[in-house]
Length: 37
Image (cartoon, rainbow, N blue to C red; front, side):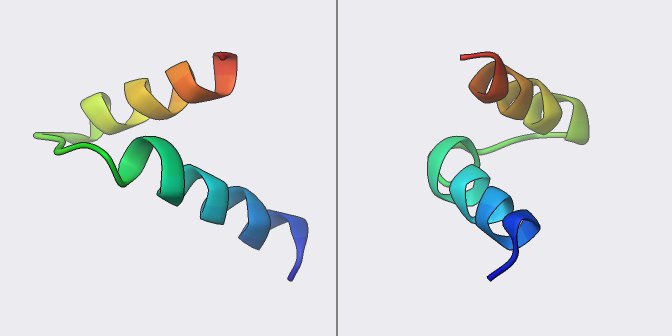
């Protein structure tokens, strides 16, 4: 696995998997919150 695959795997398991998003803005906000800690 390369680092990009690992990164998207982590993102998918954490913020994306636990939520329902009505639009791309909500999704990107949740991902940014996860990245910023």
